[in-house]
Image (cartoon, rainbow, N blue to C red; front, side, top):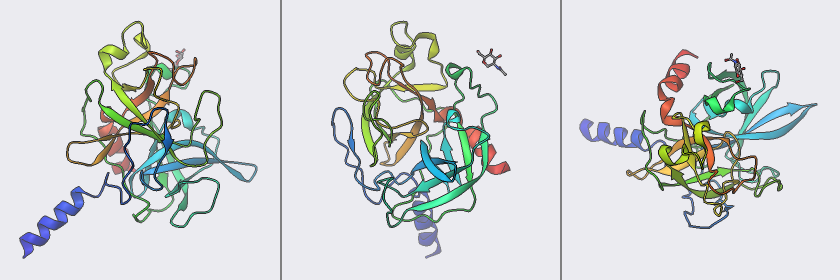
Length: 269
Ligand SMILES: *[C@@H]1O[C@H](CO)[C@@H](O)[C@H](O)[C@H]1NC(C)=O
């Protein structure tokens, strides 16, 4: 009996991230599409305050009850932030969503805002209080340290960002299917060349499938062999030439490079 209980506790623990209550619709739609509501339940909206009003600035994702992962370039030390969890349409009040203020921000010490191509575009936001997990608010799984996805591995980027180059942002959460471009390809001269570093991951860049969907700080979600979604990338930068530029895939911070840093920040804060 105790063994059975222990085993089910272990199984429950193993499934406590990356398994949405409302499964995402994983299609091969080209150009991005509206996500099934609450099907990426770790996705959050990072918002800043200006003159008493709150504005969506970046995506992010929940990795522990009190911690959100986002991009360092989203953060300006002079601003006040909050995160909205469990939301689909940013412009209406939705049941099950939750707004929590950010009590502490830890930007990677090697981040240099004058040198995005150096990488380290990663920051942790500590929430003012731990959130309870629900059908609409769940944790993302992080990949094992050092994991490298093979070329053409399919993933989904999600966010409320631009739908097309210079286009309007979206009210409802969008998803876009992107194929991983491996380091050797992405760092070759006619792709990103030396801008691409080993602490990054590229996805997209065929000039057809939108890599505009999603916005900075948001997750690149990739289905693992065990059926859980792992977040392998944090949206970092793209081509100034446009969202869908041929051979200029979206570039993400490679999460599997930062597992030890993430664990130590959480343990020490
Ligand atoms: C940040 O990057 C800029 C541009 O490459 C460089 O001049 C500067 O020295 C860097 N700062 C630090 C602290 O490394």
